[in-house]
Image 1: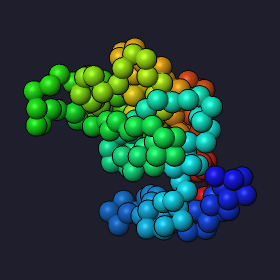
Image 2: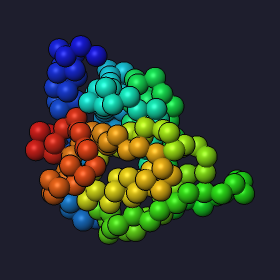
Image 3: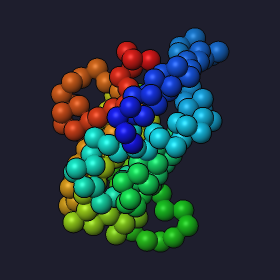
Length: 185
């Protein structure tokens, strides 16, 4: 995507971004449905997520359910590589194939999630880019980084739509790039 188009798309995304308030808790949360409903965003967001890692030559993109499936497929399409979905609470439900799993540190809801995928989908020679919608505590992406290390593949980094991390050290550890920092919205 040309630089002017990327800049215009980011501006458009910021303009249509929507905050919602939970009726139960009164806390604010991100409403990404407005982005997914917009054809211009869907057409260009994969390029925004992929661009910082294009020269790293990823061979596969991974993304955790559910929003990571959307963002991951769009980034993989932009890069011309395949996508591998990562299931949360990964239990083989339809086959008896062995799975590779890891448990996350506490996420933004203070949950420890089991993340995984069937063995053999990612190979030791793969260069892996992780993609998701939001990073808050970093727990899920740290677990995915550990999962990729256990497989013996190379972690090239993580790309997210919104960075809400409090710790800069995690950005470096994950080689994290984002389309927006929370303060930009």
